Length: 231
Image: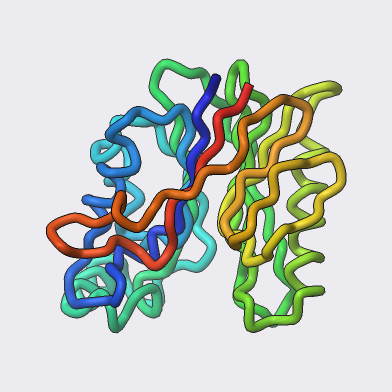
């Protein structure tokens, strides 16, 4: 079985947000038991070069929104109060991390949001023995449900165009939809974070209890990691 985990890391913030970034602790926590695949959302752009050394995994990333200032300036200002600035200056990205012993090919990405809305993207990686794995972070829940459903359909269309005949497909991330319906995929949970699977068997979605993401009395992120055993 292959462990696929997804976590919206909330720009490295705690719950409630504070001045300090906890992003490194989050990445180390999410990878300490060596998952095969880790999908991450809401990563500050400055952190992308650090994902591989912090995790020990191979990182494929895609920038959803670039920094508004030069990277060094945006990083310095954001770190003055991480909870206040979040991604306003530093931008944000998504990433798929793959175990070092697995072959993976970056299949690129696509914007799935409508023009005029905050840019939302999907990225995909082909993982040997697992198939096409896609990661996304769709528009926030304050938008009409139809907007998010349309974005999810674009994600699925992107994945289907990439997949070979009979190849398994996995779509995960922060979909901002409760019980999303996606033809051919199964495994929708009660929250907004999901790991949907098509063409391969999988165990039910597991959601981390809050106690598992508490370190030194601090709750890491406003989202809980979710995961499934696939295969």
